[in-house]
Each structure stands twice: as C-alpha cells, then as structure tokens.
Image (tube, rainbow, N blue to C red; front, side):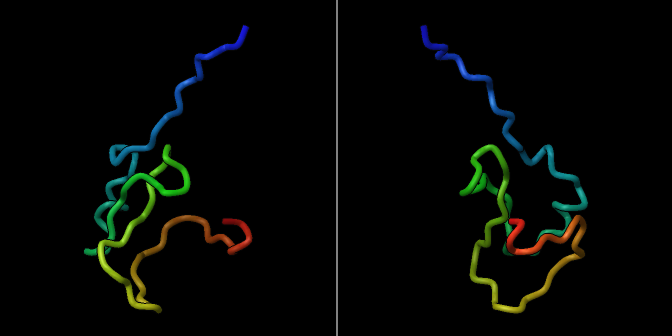
Length: 68
C-alpha cells in the first residue's frame, strides 16, 4: 500500500520577511516566489539592473559562489 499523503511544505510569504528588508529593497526589485524553490521567495528585478549597480545595506552571511 502506497502512502499518497505528503506532508505539507511551509511556503515563505511576505509576512515572513522582516520589515527592514522590505524597506531596503531598491525601487525596481520585488520579492516573488523563487524560480528555484517554489516554497521560498526570490528576488526579482522589474527592469534591467546595470552591471556593478550597488544597493544595500547587506545584512546576513556572505557566501562564495560555490556555496550557493
């Protein structure tokens, strides 16, 4: 007999995002469901961001490319 019921996956919502993060988003950046992990939010640009453009402040742990 196969168990067809799967345990529900918690989905991250805007309510889970700290207020300082939402306030710190650049004008043309939004949080929407991730293209990589549908249970998480991802950062999406609403228009092209020029290479080298900086925004912040960054809060969190920096990761190497190999860790992402």
